[in-house]
Length: 418
Image (cartoon, rainbow, N blue to C red; front, side):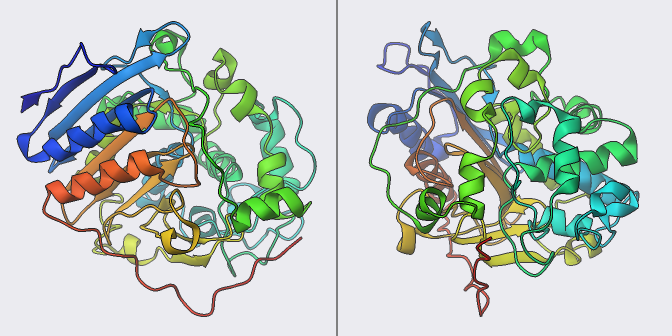
């Protein structure tokens, strides 16, 4: 391993890198010198062995506090993978089933046409409740009982199971409530006791107060021209559409609460997990070694065989997306939408992006697990150029090129404009 400490650089970077992954370290550096990075961490393991462990830059630009090895931050939708793992533990122990109606553990959820929604539909974003119709007030994402009550009352935007659309906020609350009703523990408590604690992960859903000094606050995003996409157009101009409600009726946590003690202490399990690159990568490495979801990429187990893939036009993001078992699969929208709307990983890899460009994923074919987190947000809906450059360099270092995702199924389903 090569030591990468460069304290005198414009953006100090520390850590170690296997010489075979020197190209990854170069791209990590380039993120700071050419792509607007503020502070970041990157961790890569192959067959459980660390080959890249890098961190650098500034954790808090207002104070100048540097990003240290144990610095952590909010990773937005990368948190959904942690939620999915909790659900997979319950599936593996047969406490729930993928085809089980949610109402079997949460009767109130069946109101307004949701009685047939299954656990599997929640995992693959086909349940039809991606957003809330009625206005969501300030601070409401931090109120668990309020949110699950509102979701229980929500009517589906499409017939459950017949199409899919990203559930940006509701995903965590619905699956978190399922976990709570089955185990008696909140999703954050269950994740801590069953996954993060036993595995020694620096990863929390609901941050303890003693970790607060290590947090890198989210900072203003990288400036640049915003490219108009069908999603942006619908969000701005089609009042009441799913994209419009996603952007303008998801509460104010991402603007107001994300950098507060209350906003990090709350359990918002689709969005406010706190970790770093090492925590993400180690979580996925443990997945590959374990029997629960390690076979999702390889299709070896009966559980994996039962998990359908949602693939096609996403009713929320209005682009092609692919989900399975609560995880994102490889997706490439570059030819149609340009940079920032793709997540090119291996054909059997699974993981999840977070708002602004963070990512964690596992590639079973290569024994690969990756975690990249940062505090400065970037453009696009999936990986922007910082994360994309890192992922591409990781695959190149392994002598691999990332194949394009399989052709989408035909015909694609049109969006339901409610």
